[in-house]
Image (tube, rainbow over all chains, first blue to last red):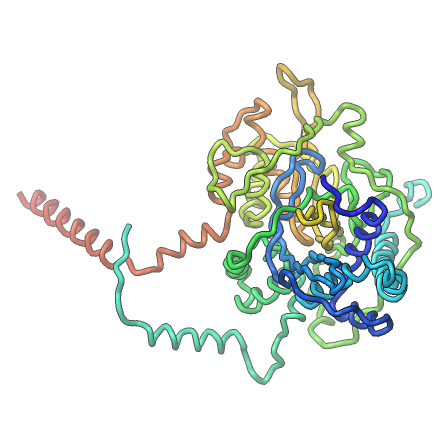
Length: 153
Length: 359
């Protein structure tokens, strides 16, 4: 696998792309209102909606198989400084994909990154983590506590 | 079989569709159902349409349910038709269901397994009595109770059995799987292709076949090793990036069905698994799929393969409800010329038979 960015950027970039993929256009927009303005961008590709074939593994851990497709929207933009941003997000929200690509580009700019991480990515990540944690707590509440027959008598 | 282009009927068709639209809407004095309401409140219908339409998109599936007036096979057909209008960007990395954010996880083989039995939002243990409270509009229910969640891992039950050597291991592979949406099925079909066909197959058909294996048509002795429902991250490697990124989550249901296996010349007696994985919350479908998957492995495991559920051609050629609908419902199309020739043949045969009887 060819890495186009140094490993440190690569990890951070993977994370913000994952967060943006799970945030609606409305959520991203509302966070951007509290952030420094994004540089204007030019569209290089899309936003366009297509399909990704989701794969599973037989038995959960064996050979891959094609489970079924999912809708995915992608977008590529370029900033005046030349930085290129990409987005691939599940679903058909073209606005989300374009915002995510613009943010991906801006976040690669060391001058913009700290403010955008603080104002946009961290709050979105926290909201997503809380949604997941709430599901985990509701699931935990349905965990069966077995009683032995002796204590039931 | 042949059809003849017949002119006419356009006006009748137009009027029929106008009536259909009115029937779809129902009594205009009642509020119209929104697609968001279907998505939220008919969520298992939406899940089934995504599974059988083989396309994960809740909004599209909900729209299809509304347009099809709740006919879920028609809705799956609509979704399949829509997907053909979209380009394919690529394939995901295989989902890691072991890392699922689990909402439900049960095992019928181990009571005290690591991670425990988590019931999740289930119909199980409800009394199946009609709830007339739902017939009246009311306040939303109170939020479900919450308990502190442990970060404990939920290992797969099949992994627990594999550690003891009691479960046949899945050979590790990164082989590119065949895709029946690109190439027509050929037989014998390998297991990845069979699983793709089953994952998009009709729930009712697979349920009946799975049931048949339990009733003696296929010698199955299954146990639910594990069922899990939850969200799994989807990763792709876009060529322009060259590294894997998460593009969102899929809700899936997975079933590991544990089956006896008597052993063969090369394999010792051990458990084998049937596997089910479906889009959305589809437990019945995942269970049926895992029963049929195991039945279809009979030949490769050196077992007798005489029951319908063990026949690849029988199962895979007939489990797709969109294809089956197409061929069954095409009988409605004008067959006037075909039938005319049948009529003439029959009249001739009858005339000959009566003449012979008279002689």
